[in-house]
Length: 287
Image (tube, rainbow, N blue to C red; front, side, top):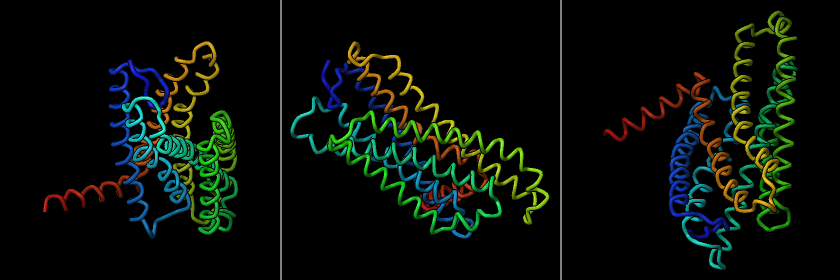
């Protein structure tokens, strides 16, 4: 038994298992989110507003997979926290919590985008301009970086970060319930009056369903955190609480790794872009 840098007493086998899981998730997630960046870049003329939000979401996801998880592996295998690791530990806290806030806020933003697209289809082009979308993404990252900085500097506790993420998640789910009923209510009217016809309506609905699956997966990965906090008393079971948090962190990281593959399964546009990128890489390696 030894104490990891996270302050949790772990056996060697536990540390190895956690490290292997982190390494696998890191590799899969880094590859997938890198493909999202390349795909959106290659889309160019076919790029839409949801693609910009998806790129922002991929930015938070890749920071988890490519940076936070390797730091997690290091902390699991380098003993107790010492003065030598203070800056590293603060950087890990900043990165982890800023990424979590960015993911939750990006989910919220992309849902707002779908609400406007389905509820106000005629106003969507005027409201969701590239300028407004980019301004929204800047705000998202300012909020995320602020939370990360405040938590890393011990100005706020993990509780406030979790409550913010919970509020974003709850609001996002409420909006999706609204989207469902609004889409059903207005579908006939949109088909009859929208100049671009029913194919465009079907495309908007498919995008909304894809984002719903992303949000649903996000919810499933976050649910254990809130259930765990509700069930485990922090004073009576401090060791169980800390060990549980390690696995929950990895579960949240898994969410960052699976999002790109959801896009690949659901979106023909992303499937084609991913295949082109991988084919080009394979041909380059073969030369």
